Image 1 (spheres, one colour):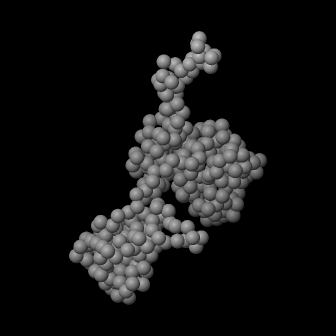
Image 2 (cartoon, helix red, strand yellow):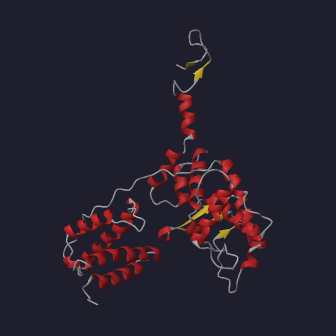
Image 3 (tube, helix red, strand yellow):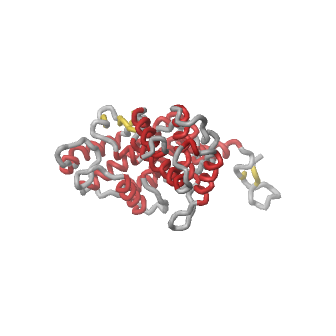
Length: 323
């Protein structure tokens, strides 16, 4: 393998990322997405980073935009962003380490990401219907109820829930240590009801699921292994569908609902940011647009045309707008 080729240098870059304590997930994503770019370059006879110029990068960006999946659909702008973003980091590292004299990717433009509102949010009543779906007469039902209560109480991501250990939960204090994205841990509160269901699961169910040696994983499958992300999505999504609330979603639906319910009940947005583990407040502020209840109350109380007054003479008995 050419020591000055992009594949050799990519291996060095990934090793550097591990030394910098990047998560394996981030390293894997960089390996895959930079690998796409390197393969595309090699098909065009470009194997070394010194031969990469800005026009070539612009052509690659256009190829990503025009790429079609097996079903004929294009990549979403978020997927395009994910595919292009690691290239900028790679070439920045190449420049800093003197593998190239200048950075041709410094002006590589990434697609502008849309800040889309969550499609579905459950009301408190709808959430209760979902929470009551597991058959708690069955041990797995107890486990599932504990999972649902944990998701609703904390708003953690499915990856974070799957990674929980018995040592992360302090039932006496009503807290849980969440291992977030980018190896950023955060301590969040557990509601009393979530504590009660986790406690029941821990003492009445989990011992029968453990397969020695016990690795300390909190939520286990019936076979004693860690729950996969796909398993969690299917499990939670099935309970949402069974509840008949007319809304689709799984683990992230609980996250969206927690944020919206807390905001509508008066929580400061910075506390919600801490709960969700958002690095930037702007990521949390999207819920101020979802939370319509408080806005409706203020609108009704302050806008002169928000309510109709009792009928007056000359309005046909239909009522008039408040002035």
